[in-house]
Image (cartoon, rainbow, N blue to C red; front, side):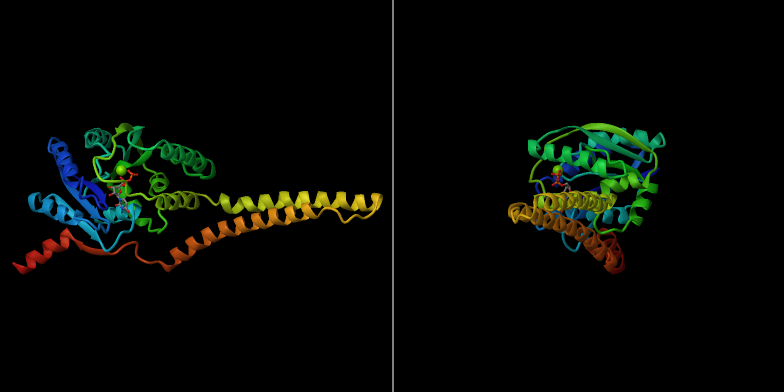
Length: 318
Ligand code: UDP
Ligand code: MG
């Protein structure tokens, strides 16, 4: 019998976790041909999330958990999940029931047909502001333009991954993670299905604007060096324009005599170039910062405790 791990990264999800678990279990119990493991990664929650997971474990031996030492963010919480998952397949799901567990059956169907990565596309996005939808749409368009990797918009982390994919993903240890790009980078046979995203079942979104912005920048800088290259082109164009302007000025001085006028255009030129230099320095800094973080080669996360350890400790005590 094949085992499927359901990976749920959870950060301050006390309000929805129990509800999510019961919906999940009612769906999984119908799929009698598979063994399930419910792996919760507690991403340094400050509320009762871990307590609730432990209670679930008392009731249901299929529940496992990894408790991270602090909040590392969803991308890293997921990679911790990849490291601890023991299933032949793994399904990533949000804790807030925005990913309907009913889709699991369809995912498994395609997995059995030989697909390694069955990802679900959002048909509509309930309960998200117009602004968020618009920024997300423009962002993916832009990302697609600058990146060589194909990144599918609206395909989130809700997907079934074969063990092969999990092993591949757990070898990618970069800190500035953009998992959505990694799924495509690793390759393997992919299958697209679709679902309707529901609004959050309770609690609030855990993404702050700043975190989303960081993720967005990670997306571009992890998969494209175009922002670095574009400045050489801008530089060439500007120097060319400068050269033409210089030529015009020389001709004018020769034929019409010298004049001191042109102070505003001088300042404009200086400010314009100064601005461009600062922007390009900033872009180089972004990449350099990433190099700096990666060269430290720190572990991605630390673990406070896992259900496995607890099991072994209890065994020893008995
Ligand atoms: N999450 C996490 N760590 C974080 C932020 C979020 O593990 O630092 C989890 C969260 O508990 C949820 C999932 O990531 O299970 C998606 O988060 P959320 O629903 O807040 O994001 P949204 O759906 O609004 O994009
Ligand atoms: Mg959500």
